Image (cartoon, rainbow, N blue to C red):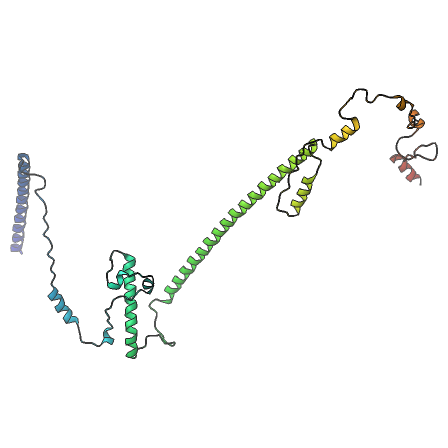
Amino acid sequence: MIIDNNIMEALEEDAQLDSESEEENSELSDEGLQEAFAKGLLKPGMNILAEEPKKLVNNAEGMKHCLAGFRKDLPWVERLDLTNLPADDIIAKAEGKVPGAASGEVNAEDDFQREMFFYRQAQATVLQALPLLSKLGIATKRPEDYFAEMAKSDQHMQKIRKKLISKQTMLEKSEKAKKLREQRKFGKKVQVEVIQRRQKEKKAMMSAVKKYQKGMTDKLDFLEGDQKNAKGSSQPAKKAPNKKGPNAKRKYKDQKFGFGGKKSGKKWNTKESHNDVSSFRAKTAHGKGVKGGKKGSKGGKQNKRPGKSVRKKMKSRS
């Protein structure tokens, strides 16, 4: 144990000395680099990590040798391998177009063309494989009593089903909301049109009434138009025609008081009117007649109804 401890101490001392020497070398190296940089011996770009280029080897013979080791003389039923070009595009042929996929020339950057090439190639493989399988007596259709375990569990499929149903319900709700918004917009538009039409009809009615009040027209056609519109006619009431000429009120006044010619002294008495006493009534002239009401049999007086208090007293007496 004593020898081992001495050996361990010696090794630790050597390690310390090595680390100190490395630090001194590093310090010296740093000082040397600083001096070289100050003298202009170091320039940017001198210390660059150079990566060695990768060597690409196309060993075709080795690949063929490995492929020959994998290959086994098995029947086609065990291999089921087919190599063929894609099937013909009937639609392109009908339109007179020759697609590049038919000749095997496909642009790898074009996703649609690449996927269509895979689809046509799989289609051609199926068309070639089905007759071969039928010759060998291999069934290609699933029988009615076929039972196989599903790749996904029922719980997983239920989750997928619920998710699909929720998506469908969300789409239906969004469609219904969209339709409701459109209906509301249409209803609001119709409501605005109805309000504008009513305001227009009201304005026309008020203007027609004002014209009738001012005597500019003597017809009440605007009332008939309002009744027609109230019954359900879609056409608004027509405005009363503004005919030039005197109205009925003016004509009546002209007929009563005269129009045109001499006006002063027109109501003066003449000899004939002074002598005409056919319209004279003595009772009316001297105030003997009673105006209004029915005349009684005695003295020409009207039988008046007794007052309310008198009638109450008469009722209490009886």
